[in-house]
Structure formats: C-alpha cells, structure tokens
Image (cartoon, rainbow, N blue to C red; front, side, top):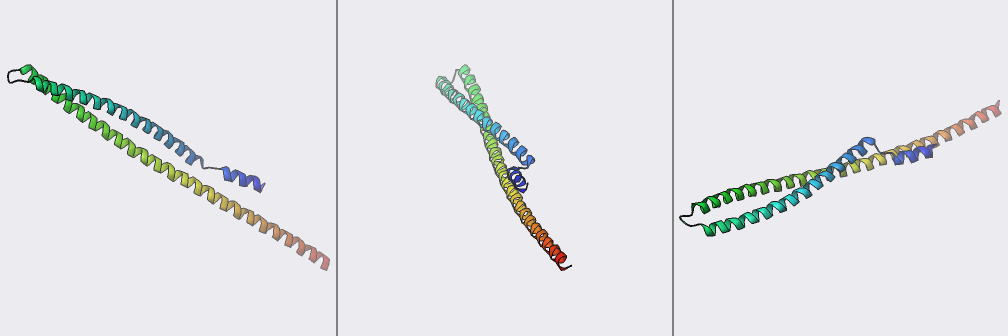
Length: 155
C-alpha cells in the first residue's frame, strides 16, 4: 500500500503547474508563429522599400527645372518611402517586443519546470519520512507485543 502511494506521488504533478505550462507553451508557439509572420512581412516591406528607392531614383533622373509632374512624382515617392520606412521600423519593433515576450515565456516555463521538480523532491522526502515513521511504528508495536508477552509470562 505504501509502495502504491509512493508510485502515485512520484508521478503526481500539481495540475495548476501543468495547466500553466501548457498555456505558456501554447502562447510561446503563437508568439513564435507571429514573429515568423512579421519577419516575412518585413522582408516584403523591405522589397517594397527597395522598389520605391528605384522609382525615386528614376524620378530624380527625369526631374528637370520645368518638369512639375516629375517634381510631384518625386515628392509623392519620397512621402511613400518615408511612410514605408516608418511601417518597417514599427514592424521591426513589433518583432523585438514579441521576441522579448517569448524569452520571458521561456523563462517562466523554466521556473515552473523547476517548481515541478522541487515539488516532486519534497513529495519524495515526505514519502521517505512516512516510510521511516511506519518502520518505527512497527518496531514499537513489536516491542509492545514483546513487553505484553513478558508481562503475561511474569504473572
């Protein structure tokens, strides 16, 4: 019976720790997927920025003192380029924030795994103490039986 309890205790893990670990692992997976999506979007935005730079260079080449259409196109491309660069920086900041959150989640998972290991260690200590206590109780019961037998013999 004690051995069965010991096996159950060794395999027992606090359900709240398991639930939190599961939730954090799912959150980490979602964040890593988000980082991947953001990195793909950054690549696309960088290609768009390069294209805009090319068009800007072409517009600058066509620009002449009297060509107001080219001047307007140049200004529009400069504004679009500035907007795309701003979007790119915002996306890169989002990736950085997501990576920081992922790192914190990994650290929390590690903390919970250490808590789980400590909990199992404490359960094992308690099981050993319980086993020692049972051994001591059995020894006391045997001594009591021997004392009672000795008393009965004396009477």
